[in-house]
Length: 207
Image (cartoon, rainbow, N blue to C red; front, side):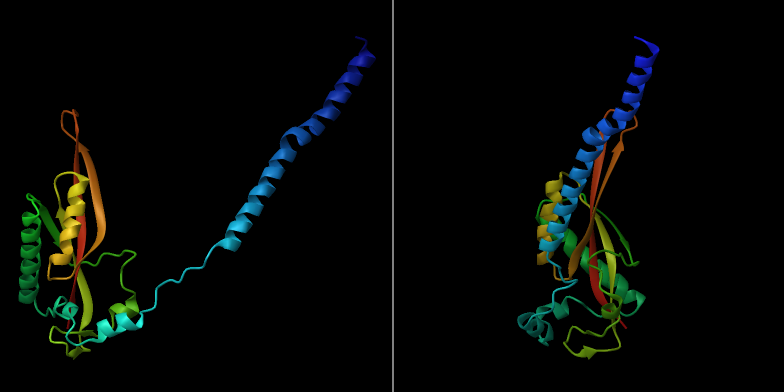
């Protein structure tokens, strides 16, 4: 090949390479990007805006306002340290009794009075609001508070769901706020040990 033809071939190569790159790579990529943008716009147009909370309906409002509603006695008024200890003892005793009746034994317990923040945490303006005592009398001097009980449940994850099923039968109001799984290897690294815990929050009225 003569030098003139070599220069012509190199010129065509340098001139045609960007064109091929644009046609074979950049243009299909832009098409896919535009198609994806249209799909996202269509999905956003079809999406439904959910309310941050569901307003309380008439039936629920009547249930909450009933002076003799059973839930009122499930949120006791706890004043001093002695009442705190008695309340914790009552909650723990009933919980362990229900779990034992279910066949769940060997559970470990630990508690904290520090509130746990979660999706189900009451808004500050509601948590600071007035509550009602066990007798149904308005107690504007009380604030709704809560403490957290962590229950270590041995066995398979099925045991966690068995424990959850027993919460409704316990008189103190216990609500699940979290799950914890921890995996640790044995000292000889021959197997992994799994521990699982259920975090429960108990509500009470604090003067």
